[in-house]
Length: 536
Image: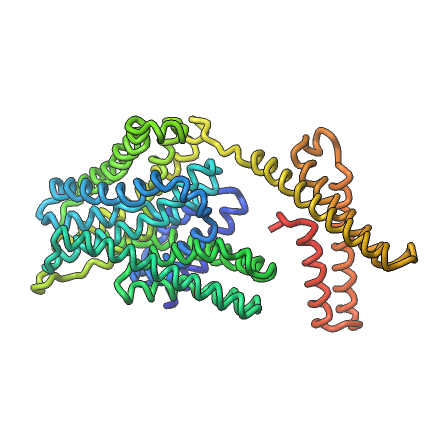
């Protein structure tokens, strides 16, 4: 990474940290800061390298999102996700391309379709980052997450086909369809092969640091391998991520804890870097429009921005309700979503860095050596669409959610489900402890046998687990006061705090060295993690 990009990454993380501390929308503020900083005299351009985005930024973000996704939820919503992730990008590319062909002077149809494919896919980073912060219902997040995992593959494949036609290589509709299907199938195969191989290797290693290191490299290696065999790198990464996510239960606890912490940290860095990088592209794009009419290109960009937002609604309402009107089985199986929920899904179609990366990847010249037609205009319009959707839709999405009362109520449902499962798990544990107690009674005559004491301790721990799960369903401590379990938790935290302070004092006094201190702190950290599993 060059020095300017390193500085951008450092600044992006610092700004994002401040935003999170004060509950602000980091993606939107980072874009605005990038727009402002880019115009500072002497700052210089920070070029967006398409390979940096497509090979180093996109894969880990897609992989992380796939690992956090529910295969069952995606499968249950496969029709809706398919319409959003495959049908909508293709329809958007065609409609936006035709509008661009009509409004942008001198742009050939093939180049206009390239622009349509470039701005067609909503961005995985934007949808997930803003949706998580706003607390969207799980079904909406499942649809947006499933869409964002797969729509890049659809749009980028359409982009390749349109680009081939624009630069002079032949690409018929049949060839394009074959290319699309081959890329999708190839990505699926590559993702499954890599996922199975990595799962076997990680289980065989039984080495948490190396297992996590391998997990970090999976997304990059999978994407590169798929692209080398002309398959869809996006589908390959998503497939590997979903496969390994479902197999994570076979990993040790240390690996799962490390994987989760490392992925969240990488996501935070990359998301912040991406949004700041988007804003910094403005000056270079404006200079590329030398000789063009500012008023005309601005009007063109606004028109295409409006079409980009509008075509999503034109597609999404019929795609939601027509299948239910035409199929009685669907009507009986599924409850029709509220129109307000459909609106929120439509309004959450922010574009992001993938669109900019695809635009910057457009070659400067075509097959015969002449300049690529309207390339500066395509870059500028893409930037306006990306920033416009982020600022217009991103800043108002929260207001619409509050206005329509679209909020997730899964927290209570999750608590009920967890409490029920914890109750069953606790009762099964108690049956196991009963067997242990019976075996100990048959072997030991001493009532003070240490094994009996351990069984009693474990029985109390299991009971506490069940009590905590049910207590969380009741009224809060502000109305009923501190529960016995909460009091015990608080005292345990205070004990751990005192013990940490003593170990540090012992090190400072020279009675133990740093290695002993680190070992002690690791033990205390594990004890705190057990007592406070949601603390991270």
